[in-house]
Length: 331
Ligand SMILES: Cc1ncc(COP(=O)(O)O)c(C=O)c1O
Image (spheres, rainbow, N blue to C red):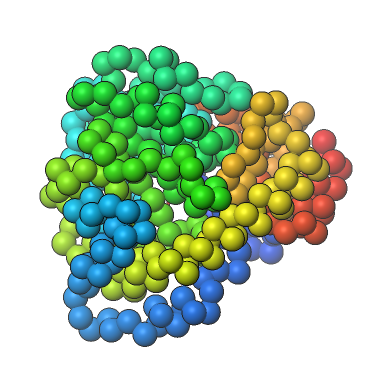
C-alpha cells in the first residue's frame, strides 16, 4: 500500500472552518459544563501534578485496580506509547478507523498492514492473520459508527498478541455493554475529549494489565498529564458524572435515529456513535455542502473509503433537518 502520511494526519478540525455549522468534529457541543469548568479553574497550577486520586477514580469507574490504569495526554498519546513500547512483528490495523494509531506506528518505524472492511464494516475475526501480534480496532468505530460485539473482539485475543481497542466513543453507547475490560492481551484506550468537550485539555487513559501499563509508562514523559486534566479524570469518573453521560447517550440515540431517518446510511450499519457515515452519489460533496454553510468530515482520507463518503456529526433535530435539506440540494 502506498501511504499518504498527510492523509493519515488529516482530522475534522481542519474541515471545520469558522462560520460553518460544524458537523466535522465529533466533540459534544455545549461542553464542558459549568460545574466542570469551575473544578478545572480551581486547580493549583503551581504544583507538579499528582496522579494518585485520578488513577483511583478511573479505576473505580471501570471496576478495576489503579495498577490497570495509565493516564495519558488524550487517547492520541496512548497510540504513540503503544507504538514505542511494543515492537510488533506483524501489526494489523482494522480500517476504516481513526488514523492516529497507524500514523503513530509508522512514525515509530513499525510496519503496518491494513485489514480493510467493506460495508457494512462488520469484522470476521478469522480475517485477521493468525500470526498478527498487534491488532488495532475502534469500538464504536470512527468513522463508520459501527459497534463490534465484545465477543467478536474477545475472539481476537490470543497468546502473544496485543489487541488494542480504541474506545474513545464508547460512552456514546448507553450502558457500554460492548466495552472491554483490562485483561492480559487487551489494551483499552479511552478519552474524555468527546463526551465532556475537553479536546483542548488533552486527557484520556489506557486500561490494561499491570505489566502492559508499566511497559507503556516506561516510554512516557514524566508528568505527562496536567493537573487540570487529572482533575477532569476525578470529576468525570464520579458516579454522578457517569450517570449524566449515560443520560446523554440515551438522548443521543433518539437524535441519531432522527438524522439517520432523514439521510440514511450504508445498508446493514446500525450507527452507535455520535456521527453517521454516508455514501453520496457524487464525489467530494463536502465542497457544495461547505458552500451551503455545513462542514462535514471528508471521507477520502480514511483508508478503505473514497471521496463519495462523508462523516456527519449528530447534533440537534433542527440542525439535522437543515443539513438534510442542504444535502438533498447538493446531490
Ligand atoms: C476514534 C478516536 N480515537 C481517539 C481520538 C483522539 O482522542 P483524544 O482527543 O483523546 O486524543 C479520536 C479523535 O478524533 C478519535 O476519533
